[in-house]
Amino acid sequence: MFDILVNSPYYWSLTGRNNGLRRQYVHTLGRGEGISLDKKEQLLAEAGFTVAQEKLWNLPSDKSIE
Image (cartoon, rainbow, N blue to C red):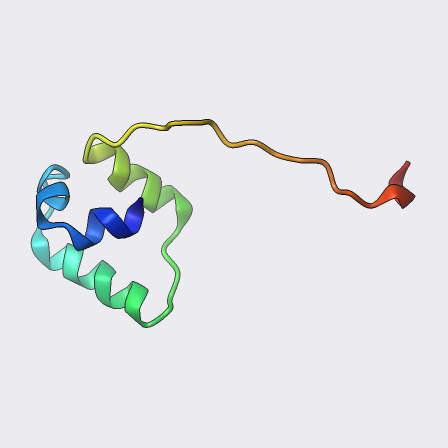
């Protein structure tokens, strides 16, 4: 979803943030650099995106733990 946000001027405008920051994130992603999960979630929420499903965690499948 974050790719959609930064690549769409419309969705980005919903964040109320400067387009220069959007271009910076596009460039950062294009270089293969990471953006923190917290920052991604913050920007998605600012644009009005909602969580479809909360994070789910699975136990490790290593049987030697038992």
